[in-house]
Structures are given as structure tokens and as C-alpha cells.
Amino acid sequence: MNKKFSNRIFKDKLASGVMLGLTTLSLLLVVGIGIGLYLKSQPILEQKTLWTLLSTTEWKPSNGEFGFLPFILGTLWITGLAIVMALSIALLTAIYLTEYSKSSVKRFVFPALDILAGLPSVVYGVWGTLFIVPWISETLAPHFVEYATGYSTLAGGIVLGVMILPLLISLFVEIFSVVPDDLRNATLSLGATPWQTIKLVVLRKSFSGILAAVVLAISRAFGETIAVLMVCGNLPVIPGSVFDSCYPIPALIANNYGEMLSVPLYDSALMLAAFFLFIVVLVFNAGSRIILHRIER
Amino acid sequence: MRFIEEKIVKLFMIGATALVFVFVASILYTIIARGLPALNWDMITKLPSGGFYIGKEGGVLNAIVGSLYIVGASTVLGLLISIPVVFYINVYLPKDSKLAYIARLSFDILFGIPSIVYGAFAFTIMIYLGLRTSLGGGIIVITLLIIPIFIRSMDEVARQLPRELLDATYSLGATRLETMGVVVRQIAPGIVTATLLSIGRAIGDAAGVMFTAGFSDSIPTSFSQPAATLPLSVFFQLSSPSADVQDRAYASALILTIIVLILSVVGRFVTQKFSKNKI
Image 1 (cartoon, rainbow over the protein chains, first blue to last red):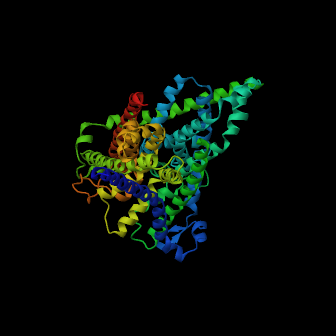
Image 2: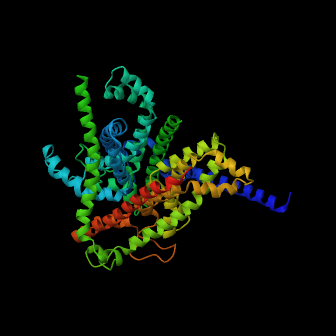
Image 3: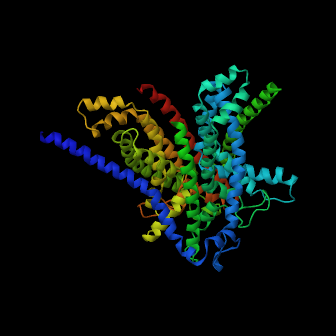
């Protein structure tokens, strides 16, 4: 064996080691983030039980009162609104794209979805404040309540809904195209209309995939910060209606990071909030990704 | 009866698809209609002068340059880290490897973690190390944020790579490391689209850099100085009570939108152009 050859083998082995190292390091990032945030949120958990933090509504950091309930409910409200809105639109659009439309329609829809997916969230925020918020306060809300600023749970829900649309549609399109054509042809040959085929075969066959996609979209919506922060009013109270302001968890973290170091336990409370987000997103993501990986095969 | 149902459902579907276009048009129209009148040469060539945020002279050059620094550096770092990882998963590991499955799953999960969580995490580490908000911190957080995007979108392409191609290079006596030339050439379009995707995400991120890069009215000259970014610049100008400053926020949002749109168009062009000479 000459020297040059063993040199090449050595290089190959070395590269293998380095690459394995890089791969494991980036995997350890998940664990690292979890541990880091957990450790930082320890101080507040030593003083108060988790249940008190989660179930009380008083948010007065300077008095040492940290009730997360308004923020949790705010997040759930806007996420719920966003999902309801985006799910119906995304399902219909994805069915239309995979089952009905000609390729000429697709040539226009996919670039449009690309644009939606690529726009930065701050641009969505600007759109929300310029378009959705005035529309709610001037056109929609007067039918239901006496006075509304428009900076509301509903505005947050709509903006968030539009933001998760491209993700949902592209996942649905992928899921529907995995359903074998033979199944479609079999029902069609029995005299079913295309819609009956979709309703009774395609949707039923891809149910687990749809569920996984929705869970994934929920976890994306949970973490969205700037756009939501710009339109939802940010008052730490439980919203009574969709026209009231709300204050989701990511907005709480983003708005207060500057002052959190000057108040005792404040930083710990915010890191606990970040830890919540991390855990929820982690569980939701892992679950839905495992299902989606299985479908792909 | 079922034919009527068919018609109605189809109508709904067309409506929903049209609604997607309505959203896109409404967003672009709003940003352009409000941003264009306020956009001028000063906006992109001048730094904010004193009193910029109460309506005085100046532009957002600090934010444009800050964003370019952060995006440029983190894209290079991200590529350097993710190409070896993709190569390792697809060439070194066998096709049904458990480690590859776990790696793909973990990067999918990392992809889903909100940037505000990355930001908060990095912020605690920076405080622990006694660092202040800085350009370097911003670059590190954005790198971490885009690595999963890089890896997952390159991996999509690399997975299609025929294993026979690798066998062919091995049979010529190449080591696994030396097939890298062949592999990289084959997944080149994937690398380009992944890069454009990552740049798009990196330039638009606000929550991560808010904690780590901070904000500054001047252009940073070293890694330890805070740096402004376009999204944060839009955000801060918009929260000003003065209408003039808010108009500038719309103009800045328009600049950001134009950059992202150009990236999207180039991405589409590159994918079409390059996918021709693939095996």
C-alpha cells in the first residue's frame, strides 16, 4: 500500500468523523435549547407552582404576579380562528388543484403560493394594520359591537390564517397526490361523481395526513410573533369576544425582553413562556412529522 | 341531486382558489400603494439622522446594510455546515439507516421551532456569557435558524440521487469523500433553491434578531456592535406616532417585499433552468 493511497483513506475517515460530529452537534441543538430554557425558568418554578402560574390571570411583574392564563387563551383564540379559516380555504384549494384544475391554473397558483410563503412576517403585519384592522373597525365590527379599535383577536386570526395558508395547501397537495389513481378510477367507474370520489375515498384515505398537516400548521401558528403582535392589541386580559384585544405568548416575550432584566423573576417568567412554546411545538411537530414521514413511504 | 352538489362544491373550490389570489393581490397592492409614495432615493442611501424617528431627514441604509451583513454571513456559515451534513446523511449512511431517519426528523422539528424561541435561547446564552446584543449574535442565531431549511431542502434533492451514480464513482477507485464533486454537481440546483429559500427566511426574520442583534442607527464596523435589520426597522418606525415616520415604515416594508419577490422569481427561474441537465 503506497503512502498516497493510505493518505486518501485517512482523509475519507477524517471527513466521516467531522461530518458525523456536525450532524450530531446540530441534533444536540434541540436538546440544548430545551435544557437551556428549562434551567432559566427554574427560579420562578421554585417560588410558585406550575398550576398557579397557568391558572391565574393577574400579570403584574413588579408585584411578582405572573398569571399566564390571558396569554395562553390569547394564543389559543387566534390560533383557533386562523386554523378554522385556513383549513377550509386550504382544503378546497388543494382539492381543486389536485383533482379538477388544468395545469394552466397550477402555473398561476403555485407562484402565488410561493409569494405568500416567502413574504416576511413583518410585511403581513403591515398589511394587517393597513387593511385588516381598519376593515374590522369600520366595516365588520359596527354590526356587532358599539366600538372597536380593530386591533383584535379576529385581526390576529385572519393575518395568521393567511400566513399558514401556503404551508397547508402545499402539504395537502402532497398528501392528495399520494392517493393512488386506481382508487379514484375504481369509484368513478362505479358511477360516482368526482366530488363523491373525493368525499368518500380521497379525503377518507388521507385523513391521517390531513390531521398531521393541521397539527403542523397549529405549531407554526403558535410561534408566529411579529405579525400577530402588530395587529392584536396586546392587552393582558382574557378576550371576551373576537373584537377584543388579546396578547399571545410570543408577543409577550418579544415586547418585554428589554425590561425583563430589571424586575426580579421577570426574565425567568418569560423564559418559562418560551419553554412552553418550545415544548408544545416540539411535541406537535414530532407527532405530525412522524405521521407524514410514514405517508411519504 | 348529486350533480347539483358537485356543481356547488366546485364553485366553492374555485372561490377558495380565487381567494388565495385575492390575498396575494391585496397584500402586494396595500404595500405598494402605501410604500411607493414614501419611497425615495434618500431612503436607501442615507443613514437615519438625529430625530429620524420623529420625522426628520434620513433613510434606512443602516437596516439595509445590517440585514445584508447578517444574511450574507449566516448564509455562508449555513452552507458550510449543512452541505457536509446532507452529504453525510445521503452518501455515508446506508439508505435505511436509523441515524438518517432520526436526523431528518430532528431537522424537521428544528425547522418548526419558532424564531422567537431561538432568539430567547440565544439571549440567555449571551447574558450568561456577558455579551451584549451584537452583529455576531444576530449572525449566529440566523445561522441556527436557517440550517434546518438548508438541510431539509437540499436533502429532498439529494435523496433522489441514484445510488448507481455513487457506485460508478466508487468503481473508479474514488473514496466516499471524493464522490463529493459528483454529488455536489448533481444537487447544485437544490443547493441554489435552498440558498434562496434560506435567504428569504433570514432576511424576513424579526423575532430572532430582536433579541440578539439589537438595533442601531449606524452601520456596525465590528461583530461586537449592534446591527439594525430591515424587519425591525419597519416595526420600530411603524410604532412611531408620527405619520411621516409611519409612511417610511411602509416604504421600508416595500423595499423588503421587493427583495423577497426578486429572490422568489430568481428561485423559480433557477429551478427550471437547472433541472434540465439533471440525470
